[in-house]
Image (tube, rainbow, N blue to C red; front, side, top):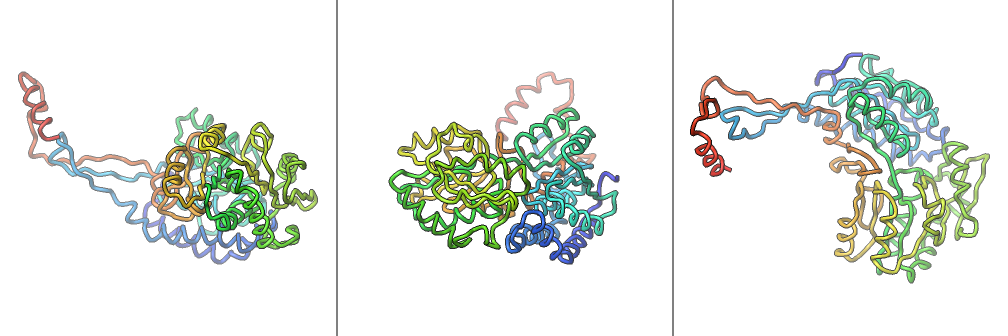
Length: 443
């Protein structure tokens, strides 16, 4: 496999990729439905349209991004022309997840190709049908020396990680992210880890509960809750909790009907293993809405859980499914105590009409990114970096930052043969005091 791709070829490849994805749009929709009954509208909005938009944005900007950036020279380099060159890392390994299998495979691939790298892409074995159409598209667009799709389970992924790469990009769980980081460290390979966490959703006293309920129901139950930035649990003042619960119930029924299992707009759990894990987490005595499961259909209904203990199994790890605990708090100290029990999350959401309170929450806690009076929509802006912090991830991407993520920034100073200042050369004699005074004055 070649190690890099020239700029003019990158743009041609991305244009071809755009045309090919549009050609296979119906097949992508069908594949995602076969994998876990993903509703066609969700597929278009969160998978196909996102990737197409990403491609158009990248194609429009790639030449500008790839140009060397001139910066001001320093005192020590003057006279000179100083530049930052964006250099491809080389051979990139991308390991994609199953929850948004099309988007989270192609979005980093687009950025990696735009930066000039060659790519080995391993999609998830769980989203088998989508992985097949991904392979078909990549094979139609790229030569195997430019990008190739490989298939396999955890053992195969482990064998890939044992090889030497110039960059590794992984999206998935915290547990596997640690394995990836450990493998990369053996070769000092740089990594981006897009992980997850228990994302809190804070509802302040006096917040617009109707708006909060509507937006949270969408954010939590889109893709059947299998979203790394979905609200993981609700924190709300006790006196407003039951009004909020009734509004959430109303919004669930408005979105998915009285019998959510019959809704064509509600996805299924990706595998029997994940279905069982989620089913076992539901404490029947705490269910205040939903709690209906079907193993044959890998179905779990939108489920609301009331006042869990912090040591509950449901609160130990990221839920990653359509189960929403609702927990009350009385004071800001109690709120802070609950959130600080967990590692830094990938997202945090605040619903409040109090600007000071909202600002306090988003500055007090460390997290990847988030929203005030909404949830998940920050992901859609390509001008905003997307990534975690601490346990929720390392590095970020999207838009220009995606190009930068897959580029080594090489510094170059170009100097003429004239204008050489003799002061820096030995013997130094009595130059030191003079140099200190000049530099102090200039800086």
